[in-house]
Length: 510
Image (tube, rainbow, N blue to C red):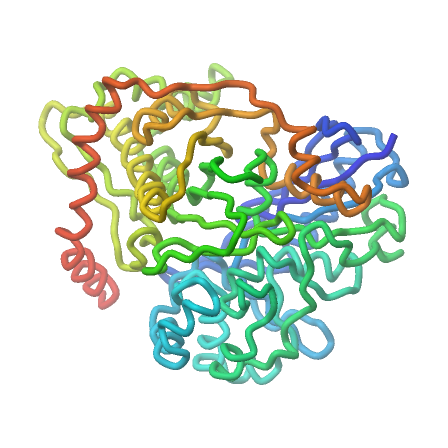
């Protein structure tokens, strides 16, 4: 029997999984690494930390599963999107990578839109210039660290840097490249127009692949470090959102997914290239060759719940440790004791700024409607409801574009909660399902590896390997009640936008 490995290079850890040739997960292993925030709104990581964690994770997974490295037929990569890895002529890292959640580039985004032209940029790349994307980071480096910029000869995304170390080959997939703001998304090629107007050399950019294409083979020195066999094929893989969608079978029209990770993403498959005229949704290439997708992104979905846990759930954390439970299970159980709507309490989940539908790095979080009756259960439920309202904003844009979504597939840590799944079904008004694959982007990367090695298309593999395991229908009474709260929620950002900006500017002066 042969096996396929999926690697997901996330923001906090690399997750490594092995699946057999029937799609069954044999084992998994994760290795964490740190995140640096040298200034408010900045987010950086050292690429060497990704490399060391990947080597450690692969080796540990093979040991844990007792699978011989020679039985691994192929490897697929998923990775956090947009992060900029700057390499010099000797392929050495010049500085820590600027990550997807880094917010320092607002001025550079304005420069890009004025230099390329907002309409032209949207036509070519399918997107506005946003602080998370890669091209603004390149401009920031040029303006603020000219000595480092002068050394740059290669520009890669996080997973592509690790694959370079494993194979010695440069490459990037279409899905991840879509988030650089340098790809002509409709034609699946680098945009000479954008690169020339921004004076970013095209020779810095790597060759492009579809996600299931073999992009390199394992070097002997990497084989000795990991326990894998030299020459093992490694496919291009994809950005984590495309891989996550493949991992739950969002590979046909009408099916959407919600990823409940640190960020939150509503993702819909497109057979043809479609663009939101106001560019509130991202239009990217999909991990399915020749297909596209649109998605809305909330910067702090699970991140908001994690913030609440870290700062206000000390009793629950102690109880979880004592009882051997997941602290989130305890928190959602407590939240379920509060009534729907948290007795008139709303939470705005803009703790990291926001992207969809409000591309605003100065947006801020808030509780609205607090009174003396509110306790911790109310606030916890309000956090979950606020995250879900924010995700519905993306669904509204998808619906307004004419796409009918008949089924929502949830994945990520939040998908484990039946209470939250029901809440999503009620707020979205769509049946919510879970599937047998719970490893998200890593599983999608393994599917891509199998596609590249076996020569079978990704859609067919998804339909063979992925089955629905649970289905939650919306509760009509709850849906109607939530609709009233959601309409109030939708108006709050516009009301508070100036206040958010004033507070952000004051905090920046202190």
